Image 1 (cartoon, rainbow over the protein chains, first blue to last red):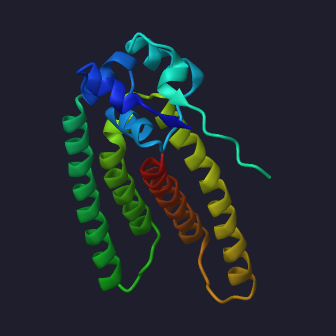
Image 2 (image 1 turned 180 degrees about the vertical axis):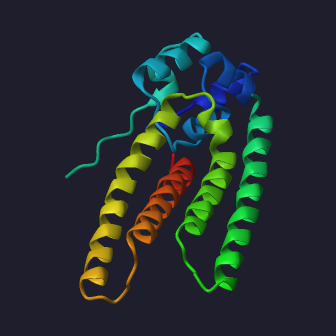
Image 3 (image 1 turned 60 degrees about the horizontal axis):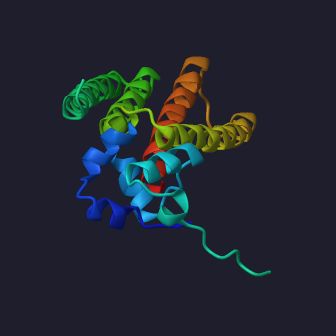
Length: 68
Length: 127
């Protein structure tokens, strides 16, 4: 799953540290999500989207399922 | 405790444990009783302290990522610990190594501590 969290965060002028505090997670969690190493749970994804006043689908992009 | 303070605390305790493990290791070598067992446990505790120094800022928040790291770490460690036992059993059976009960328990405890905490570090890099 790809995400545009970094882009949204920078557009809103929020630092990784501030974002981590807003979500109640560690800064490393924000870094991991932005780099695509860690996919957040649905509640956390919704919280992230709410921080940017948008919907989950705009922040997180589901990649096409590989064809068999 | 802040991230920096927590990290410093674990680093200092890591160096203290390192000093103790070296001291006890050298003393058991000099008395010709190497290895007794407890020097290995000190070595394991040293590794644990250094790993916790690295992991503290991440585990402090206790968020879903840190829970996932712990969960996966325990899962992988379970298989590693089983492997250690599978390897140790024939070594004892065919008398390739001879260890007493205290040494065996110390060895397994050390391997368990090192495996669990190093797997947390590896998984924190992955996730």
